[in-house]
Amino acid sequence: MVENQSPIGPDLTQGVPVTALDGGKLLGHVGQKDVLLVRVEEEIYAIDAYCSHYHGPLIDGLVVESTVRCPWHHACFDLRSGEAIRAPALSSLSCWRVDKRDGHLFVQHKRDDQKQAQPSQSAAPERIVIIGGGAAGFAAAEMLRRRDFQGSIVMLSADSAAPVDRPNLSKDYLAGSAPEEWLPLRSDKYYSKAQIDLRLRTEVTSIDTFSRHVVTAGGEKIPYDRLLLATGAEPARLTIPGADQTNVYTLRTLDDSRAIIAAAKSGRRAVVIGASFIGLEVAAALRARGIEVHVVAPSKRPMERILGPEMGDFIRALHEEHGVIFHLEDAVTAIEGSKVRLKSGAVQETDFVVAGIGVRPRLALAEQAGLAIDNGVMVNAYLETSVPGIYAAGDIARWPDPHSGQNIRVEHWVVAERQGQVAALNMLGQQQKFDAVPFFWSQHYDVPINYVGHAGKWDEIVVDGDIKAKDCTLQYKNGGRVLATASIYRDIESLETEVRIEREIA
Image (cartoon, rainbow, N blue to C red; front, top):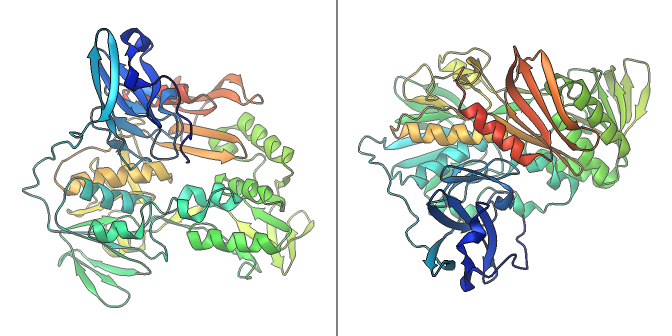
């Protein structure tokens, strides 16, 4: 997330031959700023060289029509305007003017005509209320202002902190390799400048769909013309004896991550309950802090249900190489002070426990309001619920996925952000269908796992490459059709899979 200090490639102010772009992309610099040249048919674009999300190198990304996609986490930028048109990137990139003279290309100045004309908002609502301070809620508020919405935005969050980069809470921040100042999605000043009324520690207790207002725990009634439900999910809680001890943690919020970090500073041993993505990312982060880690889970292999047996075996071996001790096909039956009792009869001494046994969508408000519920809040292709004017996005939304032909609900950060963005556009009357292909990434030590698509079930896994060598793709098929792909260090193939699934409609 830190820019390179030394510029890379040729000095574009001095010009490069047009033939230097025969490969389609060229990385150069203007002064100390790295700039990417991209040829798309007869057009040549110049754009900042690194993704505004985690600084992924766009030279290694994929050009699709007039866009470029980041190889790391699939953010997408418009080459014509620099706009971040798909999360997880939210900030636009600068575009540069390209001059062609005597068979050479020169880049010397940023363009000052990047801002695109915004669609008419003659029918836009005056008051929008967003319930939730996570990925979907923030992305919606940001998109509303990006599209020059002039009405009021009230954002009600039960969290104590402004929206943060939640994936980092179980990855680099928890491991101690990312400072806390990297976490906020925007500074505190952003909300006042953008006139977003962000209210923290605010619980909404009910929604009056007839009078169109929400009621907070303090009794305040807040009216809306359009409402976005982005209440997210909450960690599943242990129900065993001792689950309420002060040394037992879950991880969802910044406060949760801070509490685990504090425990790690004074403790030496930890038990992680659950071999899920969160559980194992926590295990990796704690190992980076020198904590002895024991992972207890009922499954035969870590993450086998999502990634299959071969990837599960690889993930287990990877963690064991870093000192994690697994207790699989077992369960915690009680926590007694510093003792963790297992179903197998074993007893583990520990200083603290982290439970990563899944999450549950927060549906109470939707149920109270009478919205259609079926393993989530049912929405149509435009993310509108069964009550007109109320939209849902993120972990709670169950939408008609055009690629699988099924109604699905996905608990992933990037999906939540993209849904928040589309919901915002539709609250402004644009009628844009949500048809993005689900994507998530997980980080284990130095190994990133990218997953694109959605495979609720499969009958075949096709492995290309060598999983143990950390150079592979796995295709999850059902009836011969590729539903999803997981990959390690094969970024272009992951992006190409995303594009291919985008173009397939079930």
